[in-house]
Image 1 (cartoon, rainbow, N blue to C red):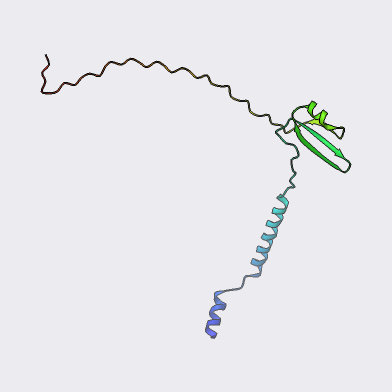
Image 2 (cartoon, rainbow, N blue to C red; image 1 turned 90 degrees about the vertical axis):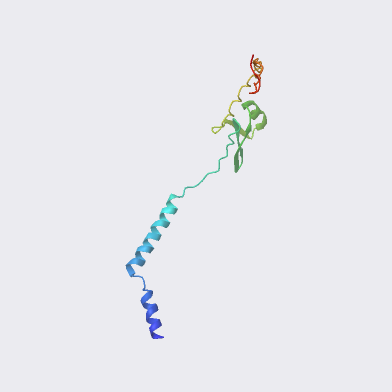
Length: 125
């Protein structure tokens, strides 16, 4: 029994005090780096599909609605509760490609009739 206990104690040496401190310090540095690199994220309130937005102010609540296709449409729909602004994140759709005119197929080239094969037994005159 004593021999087994000595084997276990020799096999698993306790960590040195300096090694434990170094690992703890590395963990603290890593944790601080992760926290320091995190940045706050902001929700984008502008829909990039529409060119005009309305900033609505209702007392404590204010928000931005982006679903207008023109300034006139926004002004008519504001009802005095907000003001219309151009969407700074608007991305116009890509232009549609022009239709390609189909070319008529070329007339088939006239080909000579296939040559007849002469058999070895036949003589050519």
